[in-house]
Image 1: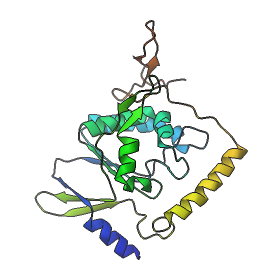
Image 2: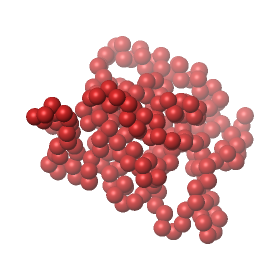
Image 3: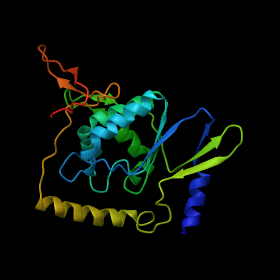
Image 4: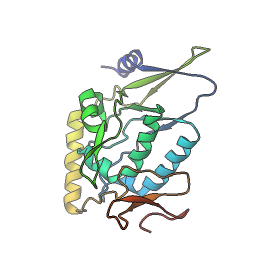
Length: 235
């Protein structure tokens, strides 16, 4: 199917979101969150991304993740990704709780086109400290496309990831994914690196200048301790 046909279908099936002159949106794309291993490029940017999310949350923006938020081609186990980047998912949860979180799928996370996969993997997550399931993004709907429609003028903006119509990344994505994954596994075997869990669980920074980490404390139960501004946990 040609690109035009795929984009036309995406437009026709898009989720319509109305906005006005007071609305504020921030768009994040192609973050490719991984499992925290040496192959996870997102790990290098986790701190700055978390601070950016905290800023836009405080400023009243609606967050739109427009695909490839996770790299499920290379890292197929989403629970490992959530565990490695719990501090980021904690911020996403805050946006979602405030009804200010919209999400699209791309080619590297096209599994989210299946609502069952979304329900099984994003509605809740395991707390690494207690082992119990906690609400993560309950009720989340992941779309192929959005149509942002101005309430007064009726003008629309179509938002898509952009893989539609590309043979390797759309119609034949499964074959491309397995080829990509085999190459990634081969690279890991040459340079193995254990997964480093995120001690911050699903918590997120409060404010723009502080990060928080788990501290067992005297009671043995985890609580949160603020870091001085500018200090990175573990530094």
